[in-house]
Image (cartoon, rainbow, N blue to C red):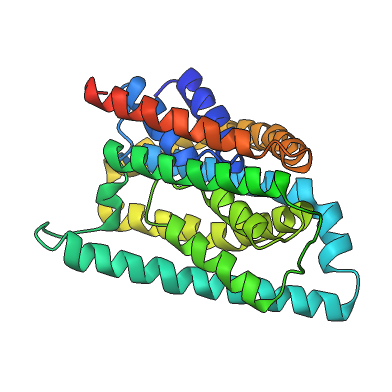
Amino acid sequence: MTLAQILVLAVIQGAAELLPVSSSAHVIVAEKLMGLDPTTPEMTLLLVMLHTGTMFAVIFYFWKSWKASFFSSKEVFWNSAKFIAAATVMTGIVGLSLKFLIEKFFMRDVPHAQIELLFGNMNLISAALAAVGLLILFAGIRNRSSSKQENTLGMKESCYVGAVQGICLPFRGFSRSGATISTGLFLGIPRKKIEEFSFALAVVLTPPIIVREVMRLLQEQHASTSTMAGLSRMFMPSIIGMAFSFVAGLLALRWLSSWLETGRWYLFGLYCLCASVGVFFLHQYGI
């Protein structure tokens, strides 16, 4: 893998990870167009580093508003912590339940079935993009045309958002930020509040995912000499990619906030629907 390819993937991952357009769908298509194999250890390491870069971008971008929203008093902090914890638990329950059902029932004829085997399924990615596109589109139009009556973010709303986030985990293409923010808009939660909450959930969720991917990488490769040598060669380029994903993530967050707060959220839904059609036809042509 060349440095140019790493930088392209870093920009795509950094921007698409934080926009409601599904980074996994865009990265998988980009990898296939560049002739790269996403299952290699080097690619796994790169994606882990790029995810780390976008996580730091989220923390940097939201830190000031999080201090005002979540750390203004001890009571506010503990209430916020309870809501984030409840949402994360719901994410785990729904996500792990779906993983079990898919692996044990829908993939029962596949030897050593793992949910990750579906991550490169372009038809499934296309369908997931279409589904989240419709969700974003309807939420954006509804929020734009509705009255200014808004609801607070409570335990019930947090659990709903967390459950929807759990649905996103097994399905590449079903954007996490798009689904969670759209759910909040449907529930009447103020735009800025649900944006802050959605990305707070992302910061909590990202480290366990990173650890899991690293553990999978080590278990599958058994730390062989050739693998470790390949990972060593990829380490510095991956650091550079992480820096680029950080910058791309900051720019993407500014874009997302602007469109969300000015009532243009639905445009991301239109993009996802177009991307769904594009992925479908790329797959038909053998990409």
